[in-house]
Amino acid sequence: MTGHHALPRRWLVTLMIVGLAASFAAWNAMTVAGATVVLSKVASGFTSPDYVTSPHDGSSRLFVVEQGGKIKIIQSGKVLGTPFLDISSLVAKGGERGLLGLAFHPNFKSNGLFYIDYTRSNGDTVIARYKRSSNGNIADRSSAYPMLTIPQPYANHNGGMLAFGPDGFLYIGMGDGGSSGDPQNRAQNLDSLLGKILRIDVNGGNSQHRYLIPSSNPYVGVAGRDEVWSYGLRNPWRFSFDHATGDMWIGDVGQDAWEEIDRAKVNTSSTSRGRGLNYGWHILEGTHCYPLGSGCTRAGKMGPVAEYDHGQGCSVTGGYVYRGPDVPALRDRYVFADFCSGRIWTVPRTTGAPATPQLLVDTAFSISSFGEGGAYELFVVDRGGGAIYRLR
Figure 1 (spheres, rainbow, N blue to C red):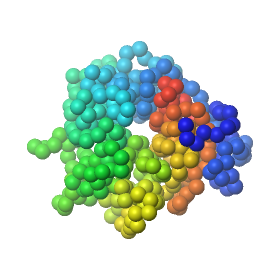
Figure 2: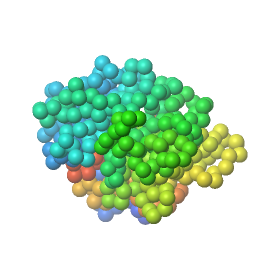
Figure 3: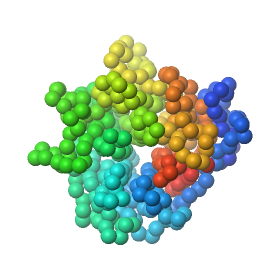
């Protein structure tokens, strides 16, 4: 794979923190105040896992999403024998299609509602609501309530991330629809839901939709789809919200040369938390004109806070600003990875652009996602190995 180095992989590595002189390309570990990071295996035996999350209901359970259409529960260190949900018969499998996202309603403990993002058999993206059954470890499959269906022109760049923001609204990550180079310019087209972050209110519906449109969405009452929150994204596979600040972080997968991390701060401006921002694709790939030498303009576009080239990897996996209890030295740092190289990096939450990512750990994993536990512990999903690890 592109970007592999000759040194052996290690699971226990020293942590590189603010003030180190080590460069992004220096893979040798360094020690800061004796801090160390361990990737501790939590559970294994999963088939193509692509996400892990917590319902934040006090149960300490972890829910693991398998691309093929199952959600499984880790409880007390064991994987329960019966899946929480199995929609394998509904899901188009393989490549970048499948069951791709899961988000629990903020009031899941009382209402039992959760939301999934999957690719159905004809290739379209479906956002659907389900409800847990009287057995809290098993969902009621008959409760399926498809809320939004988005046609997909190609088999790749499906996005798939779902997350409730601090405002209580559901945010949806949609890729540009695929092929290569966004040939129909969907990411820049405000009348398309592709290449966007969408925002909807799941607590209601009307004659038009099985959801409501927040009145503060940027294109309500003007040209553009009302669901659009921000645009100009190629494939925002994983995004997250910083629980301490509300800032939004996006790992947007690049095309030929550059992977990028986008940050949308909470502030008093009209673009707070990314509202109406244009991240630039397919005019820009990271901070660079696409195609190279095209003489593009960067005016009106939000550049990434960090980027890396394809000498370091080939597909960014967005993560989280660390807020967990295990590694205090990591707090206030955004942790992310590359699916191809297995490298995990960090940048300070408050960094200016362009930030230089610092290597945290170099693994042999195919890191498809990160996820947070009930106490905001940080977990790593190794798709290739079918395992979940905890960052300690």
